[in-house]
Amino acid sequence: MIKRKEIEIEISPDGDKISLHIKGVKGHECLDATEVLEKGIGEIIDRNYTQEYHQTPEKKAINVSFNRKK
Image 1: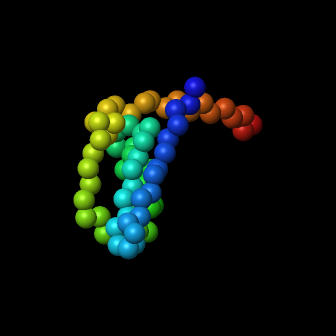
Image 2: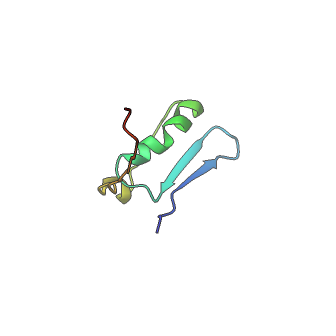
Image 3: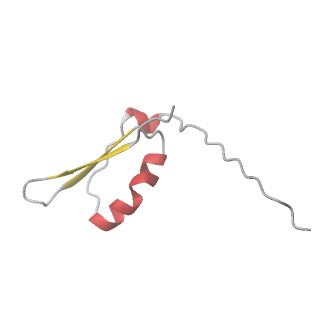
C-alpha cells in the first residue's frame, strides 16, 4: 500500500507569511519535496523539523528492463 504524502500550504490573512507543512515524507526527502515551492515563494525565515524528518527514508526500488542492441 502506498502511503499518502501531503504538502499543506498555509497563507496568513495579510499574505505576508506562507507556511508549508509536510506529512508522510521521511528524512531529507521532505526538503526535496518542497524545493520548487520554496524557490518560488521567497526567503525562508524559519524551518522546524518534525519527527518524520529524523526518521530514515524508505528505500525505493526501481526495476528497469531493456532489450540489448544487436
